[in-house]
Amino acid sequence: MSRTPWRRNAPPAESITRARTGLTHDLRGRQRRYLVAMLVRSACVVVMAATWNRWPVVAVSALAGAVVIPYVAVVVAQAHWRQQRGTRHAVARVREEPAPAARVVLEPTLILPPERNTAG
Image (tube, rainbow, N blue to C red; front, top):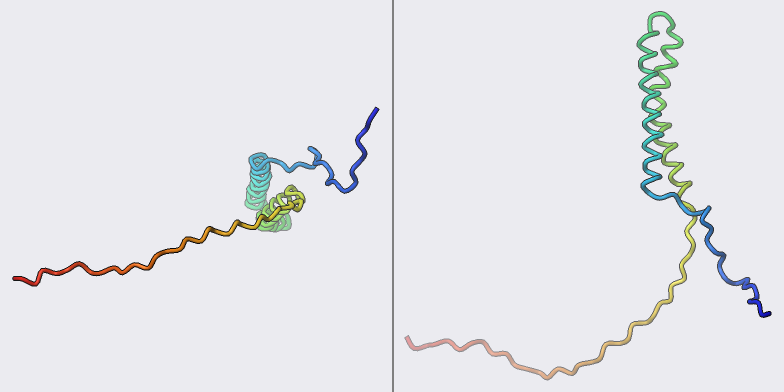
């Protein structure tokens, strides 16, 4: 029984579990997270408006949340996107030298302007 020996110099096979998320799935997920963050921000604005006169500490906290949430949502969405990109493996490219173009010998030519009719 003949078995192929292990090749230690060969690059490892790609695992499907390390594959990146498709662009449409990634975009949809980021849109959902951003939408949830904006809904929470809207709730903070409503809480701020409802509690401004009775509980000013709660209102100021809600205002701070409404100001900070958009920044955090964008930073989290971009950081998650970079994590999903994965590592790029170096692609070994074989550079072939282009074959030199065949040299064509051109004969010298003289181009004369058209003759004008001087009779007039």
